[in-house]
Length: 440
Image (cartoon, rainbow, N blue to C red; front, top):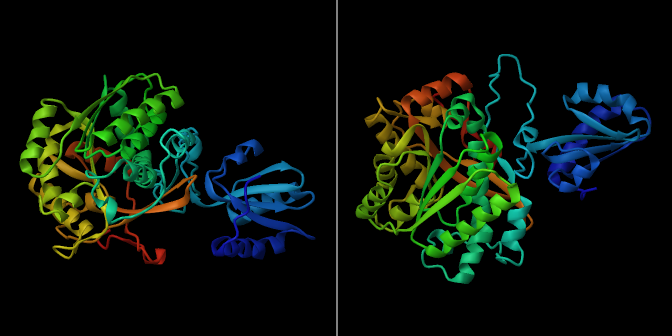
């Protein structure tokens, strides 16, 4: 069985459940909180994919199962007559397992949206990637240093492995969590399944964490025989070599039947002319996914392009297919030169683009931005994602993002998911400060 988790959160959980169990169970019992992300739970025949698993030990516990499930609103598992398990805490995405097994429906409150649309925030790095990255093959290290790794074009080989071991998993988790529910919708998935091929463009790809996260979603939620073409642009050839190896290992580990072709391009972006070069290189192609992750902040902070978010929108949205998605995502730190936070700049510049192209393009996510395209606020938005791997449990990344698509696609998407209120600002210090957009 997995290790016991004994911290302030689990102590509060146990005390909460004890208050109810004391009124349900007659006689002595014990209750323990375990690590729900430990793969050894599979040997117990139980995979709830939650942060914690509560185990109650009590003779003839099966006699209390229905009452416990009804009282706490949980689905439990009784492996024998003396033990009862149930999951609690945050949902966790484990790409090693089928996505349909991961997504467990929460009980719906009366009048609550019934689409099931919810951005998942916790993920686990697949075991093959964990072994590849931190094992003998790459020997990468987890060693956060935001200031040193804000810019990766001048990294030494040793520093590159620290970058891989620290920031690749974060990008993987962000992409996996963001695209998971979007691609499961009928609006998006049906469009992808009609494709002859799926084209992905990544501008400033780094070692490709966001690409691998997206590949896992596509492999679980899309027709397996549709080939994928990846066009990656980055100023560092070494990180693209790593990306090539990771995609190759993905194909072996998942035994995917689809053909995946990567076209790597070494291209620094120091100004508008470099963006034009990329546009020329991709020519008349159209894309199903365009990714621009954690790159614009570098352009702004280094004084290359102050309106980088607006430039990316103006330059690359025209390459979107009719069912294509453009993700622009960035960190939530501050630009020291302007003393403004990058999420403020992102929202301000993307709102300017959407307003100026309202007949053709629209925001798909965040939902509040999609519902109020007239908004010109440069508000601070932030979403926290957590990725667990062998070097760190629940490693947190804080990002702001916007997904843009053709207007007709956004309208179909919003009609399918219904009226959902989405948190757009999660406080770094206190999750209790999480807030939805005031316009929703």
